[in-house]
Image 1 (spheres, one colour):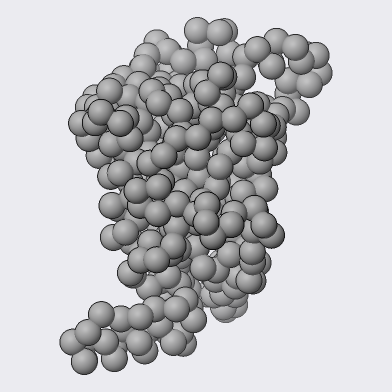
Image 2: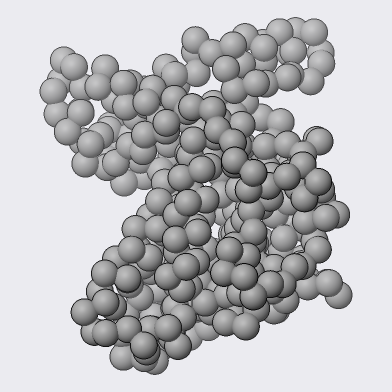
Length: 329
C-alpha cells in the first residue's frame, strides 16, 4: 500500500546527519510499494469508458451514482476517470459524495496499475459548486466542523495520491470545487469555466485548503485579492494567473477541458510509472523545504528507480530504437 510521505516526516528523517539520507530513501521506497487491487464488481468490462465513451453523460437519482469511476482500457489502460454526477445539486459536495470519493481515493492508492487520474464532471456547465448548502443548512452547528474537517481530509488525500491527477474544469468550480481542483497536480479549464473561492460572500473562509493552496499556485497577493473579493474568473483569466495550465475553447458537447485532459493523460501513460510517481514525490516534498533538503529528497527518490526492471527496459528500448514497454516493476 502506498505510504504518503509528509513534510514533517521527511524533516525528522533528515535530522540525523549520518542516517538521514537512508531514512528518506526508506520513505521513498515505501511510497512506491503498492499492492494489487480490483474494484470488486464496481466497474464491469462492458461499462469501462473508451476515449469516446468517456464523453457520454449519465444521470441517476441513485446516491451510488453521485460518483462514477471508470478505468479506461486498450491503449488508455492505466487512466482512471472520476466523474462527479449530481446534476440536481450542481455537483455540490455532500456527505455521500465525500464518502464515495474517499473510497475511490483509497482504491486508487492500492492499485499499482493506475498511471493517471482525471477528475471531471458528468454534468454540463458545472465542475463543482462547492459545499452542498442545502444539506449544510439542515446540519446542527456541532456537525459543521467535523464535516468540513472530513472534506478537508479528503482533498488532502486527493493531493497525496502517488500518481498524476488532472482536474478537467468544463464549468463552474467554486469554493470547495476549486479547492478540489487545486489539490490536483494539473488543471485544465474551458474558456467558459468560472473559478473562484467565494466563501467570504457567506461570511466564512475557504475551509478545505484554499487559503493555503491558492497562494502557492498564483502568489500571495493575487490569492488575497481573489479570496477577499470573492471573485470568480473565467478560464482565460485563470490561465493568465497560472491557476490552470491550459484554457481551451469550449465545444458543442461541453467537454473540451476533459478531452484536453485525456490528451495529457495519454502523454503521461507511456512513461515509466515508477519514475513518474517518484518525480511527483520529489517535486511535492522538495518544494516545501530548503534546497539542500530538497536535493536529498530527489536523491532518495532517484535511488528508488535504479533497481527497477523499467529502467533496464528503457535503456534496452533506447539501444534497440523501439518504444519501451514499462510494467511498473
